[in-house]
Image (cartoon, rainbow, N blue to C red; front, side):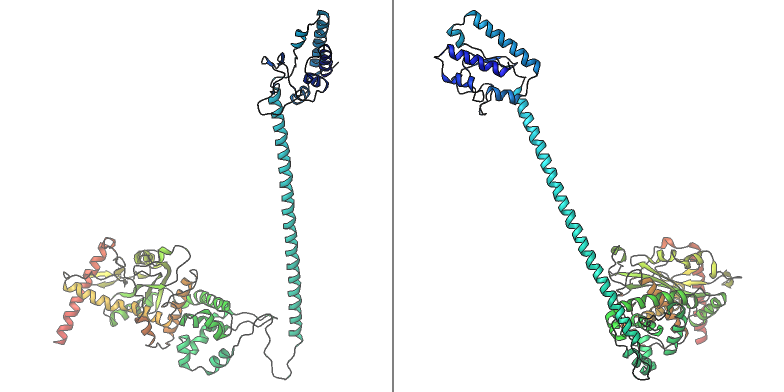
Length: 566
């Protein structure tokens, strides 16, 4: 007999012997699933102690306030199944109680105080709630995982479908373009001129721009003054330049279209360097695309620096230095001088990075170029591309001119010439932004305490050093891309400056005319050149002795001139 059957039989017997008891206890005995209402003599054995419960009360046995009422069977089921050993032990205890009750002759009052002993596991209700929570948590986790997997599958399917659509569209466009190119190639190959005159080949897959201005106007109708005004050089110098650049710029024709002529590529670049107009204006003028104009400017500048710089912008030889020293001595009365050095600020647009470094002392963006010129105003050393805030002395110390001057190099003459009773080699002239060296002289700072010899030295130095200022003036007037704000990228600007210096030497060496009206734009520029000044602490004490001997020499020269005039 199970635990449930024993309880049922016990309540049945007790109800038969006690007919006066209410029907609630009978219903409990006959229907174990009904709500449990224990009598006052009923106690629940839970392991924490026994507690007596009123059978007529509405409180549930072993239930918390506000919870649903549970039957004995339901409480046993929620708490978990008992083991077979526990059930057998309970049955034996119940049978002993029944035999004792039958043999002892129970009275009515004793039967009314029937104790119902329910042997349950400790904390039955708490364990049931925890089991229910674990089951619910596991169910929610499983449901969330299924939903997430479903969403991931749907997203993956959508992405796969989009990739497939894109692949099909790209595949279709590829075959469409390929078919179109094949048709146009067949048309171009099968087309023949109707007349015997040679027909101009048709450019396939490109826009056909008008080239009448270049082929008819420039090449046939341009006068020498037009060549000089538009390209800043004569027609002969232009074609000489094209011949020297041919190994680098020559292009081969293809079956689809002919290559852009070499002369036209050079003309596009020179037009840009001379006028600094926009790419779209040059594009319309020459009948080429804007990207073609940009590429022509870049390629021609690189070719000029690579091929013509060793020929037209190089370190002078010893004979050339002697000629330059004689020119400075006869024209400006400054012996042993072979050149002058100066700096030029070229305006630019704001670069993409390190913009603060390109603001100069005048408050506008620029890159600095250092140039050394001879007595004829031709450059023989150029160092370009430094930010506008860089000091002139710092540029000099990072140039090859500094290394050659400090080590002697080309400025050291063997044997040195005698000057005022002391040996002296060649030297150069600079402004206040450069340090005073034995091979690089600059003027005395202007003040009221200067001696007559120092003032004479300053006058002669300014006259001789004006050759570099004049060279920079002619350079910017001839190639106005250095005068106006340059909108090229920063990696192209230094190459463009070097190319302009080389072209300046080409024009000066071949005697191309220079129009004075070109200087008007330079003289009325809105952005004056910044001035720089270095600290006297950077001056060389030995150079001061050389400058003092020049002061004595210039005083003697002025005294002799006054004596001759008198």
